Image (cartoon, rainbow, N blue to C red; front, side, top):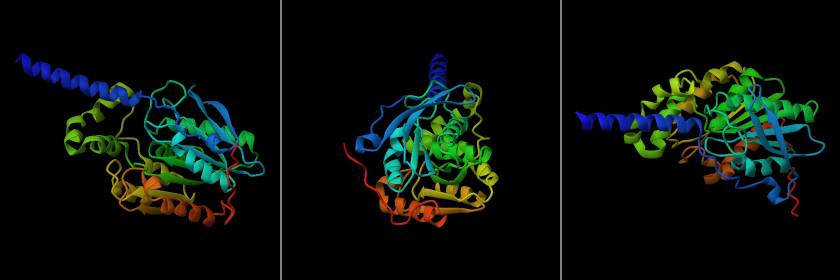
Length: 296
């Protein structure tokens, strides 16, 4: 019947459009900068091994060998973790905030929700090590950026002292389905479920094979702090438990009542307190030392 063929064709087009959009998402403007609150912000550019131009901010902390590389989540940009960069700079960190590929002001490329974004962080590591000899690097990631941080640390561990991961998925297949559930509940998840199959031929990414827990297992004794909302609909609590089980030296802090990657806004004292305690435990922060930004 013609009407059925029309409906099925429209449905297939919807699925294809959704997959292609996920790989080339809308870019949002930068909305917060450390320089706006008086920190010494400088523009930087890097090129990845696969030829993508990555742009970001370097926030210098003279005299310190500690470097925080902060990787944002999907549909965001370097501004997302800029408030955390201010907090870390006050506690003695140089900070590098990149726009991951296909986001912010970085180059055009296919977004892979963490897999290839690890190459962006690899370029960040190279820049940080070039600027600071003997740099002690901590990777901070939110959602997609957390997954990318785990993949990067698994392949390029040299110089990385620890990982702080906010709301990472454990398996991309779960996050893909969770994304639709996050946006529109179970009905939308069921409707859009075939996108996980179309992703392979349309984007070259097989969500069944992208596994954060497998990467965390490879990093051995490197300290890992996992922060996860107890009400996370995109990456359900079971994903966090699976990631923790893969860590040799991991800690999981639940952000009670929080949805995906919102704990830093809803429970900032718990979120920042957990990070400070973790960094102190591993000798990566000066206890009680806090400097204010310099306005103007």
